[in-house]
Image (cartoon, rainbow over all chains, first blue to last red; front, side, top):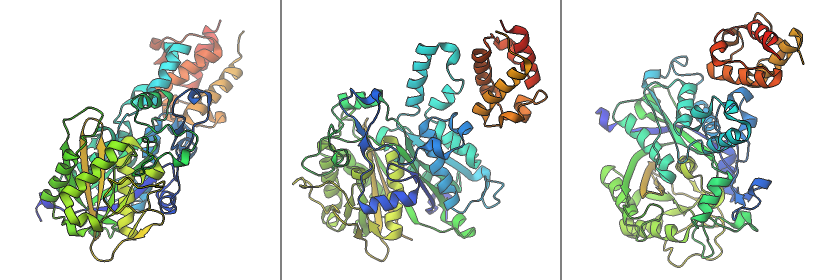
Length: 420
Length: 82
């Protein structure tokens, strides 16, 4: 098989999310239909129009050793925790090189973030104003730079084939996974740790998103606020956390006898060129990304049995996505079980593509689609099979799933995964 | 107010513990910040700033490079405290 045609598989999974401090508890929360959205306590959130968010179930500062945690922005803390879980889950026992089954020069890292170390930036600006320049942390720059999570994960695992950070707003995590697939497919690496992370629950980003009219203001009923496809939806709920996968060439995984969750067939990309912060309402760009995926991979629409939708719970975006799917998949959309996991995790922005890749891989591996919660009345324009109530078993045989992520700026990323 | 050398070493111990996670009792006069106490160059800036505040001294950046050991820092602080 030529280096540009190598099969890429998922061999490790890790997460820390609003539903749990690892991928197992997150997956359990998704299947149970549990909401991770909570009221935001504390004076600094008291006067905001939005006072709810899907905060992390386990505080990362309680998981990492204190001297390490204080040198990392919260977004990097999440990424490191998820990456450690994924790395161990893939069967690696030490850094590359020390674990002889992986060559450091053939190992890469691609971890994305939408906003980077925004809480570090804002908190250190407060330090500057209140305590003076001498007290500003010397770690500020390595903490706030958006490539910090990816760089810190590369330090952790000893990755020397390249460390990358695609930034494409809420599509970032999915773009990272797609980039990692390309690194392996084109022969630059055998193993890549990839995913997304975000930690932006701070009054400034919360106020800014609220003023864009993009967020749910359902402060009185936090667990019901994120409701994709429901007629009562009024915007997304911000979440935080990280989802990371270990991707590997199938050959490399076989050689070391690794457990394989699924194959990643590739990604379809496009851009809207429509508006900086609004989705193109007909779903034209999304359809184009999907078509590009079908054209560039050997995915057959008849194989697609599951879809983790982008579905943020905004009225415009959720419907545009469904319209695009119908346009490209036609009648084949009728056998696709659609899950909108943001109904439970909230919207992890640059972390969303990471955690949703984790959720999609686990759905294929366990052959079950998580439910979408909070749909009391399905929007009549949502002409598709959305899983509600209980988790839905997925068929046996070779089946594929799609993971969609779209971001402010018109970024459309569609990933396809398939059972092995 | 002047601090005794014992108080300064104990104070540095607490600072290094907070920043590098090293037990405070391991922070002794002959210990090198970088080689023994896991304090890298960026973290050393944190140690210095915390020491300045705690012991009411000014430690200019040019002098920081001469503070290799806990003993160097304790002597410097003892000599320069107001």
